Length: 169
Image (cartoon, rainbow, N blue to C red; front, side, top):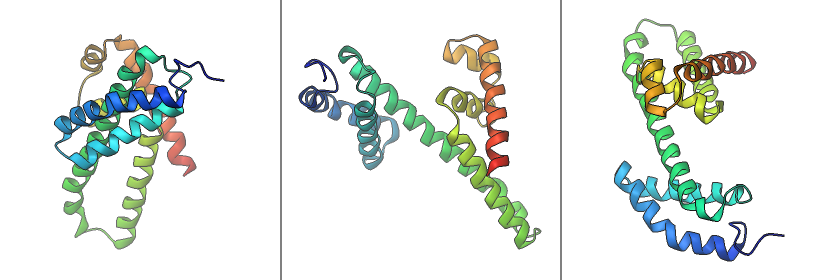
């Protein structure tokens, strides 16, 4: 049974939705410039809130929504950046490589994307900031407000997990 002031209560959840959905959507729209993407991210954030309603305090629901939505948006941006980087590099090799090699390369890129997406949020964030944005561990630590040692540990765990994921695929 849920507490009447709990996020898990349907009425309370509806109130949160009514009060926060437009502000969240607008925030995301200002970030991405795409209304459909902003609406999708807003819906995804509310779905996550519902799934984790027992863990989220009522007072923290707004912060939870904005954090989840912001992180989802950043993950989409990072994914697009990876795709663009790959597209920039791919045409150089297309003319000289065999079709089999091209197919293997495409399959590997799919595996790599799946491995990156399977990482926990903290590890994925550190991996993408380091490997895509070319940030140093020190810069990442300053951005995230944690020690450089914590960043090194996250990166190590991310690389170990990715190796295992790619081998198993």
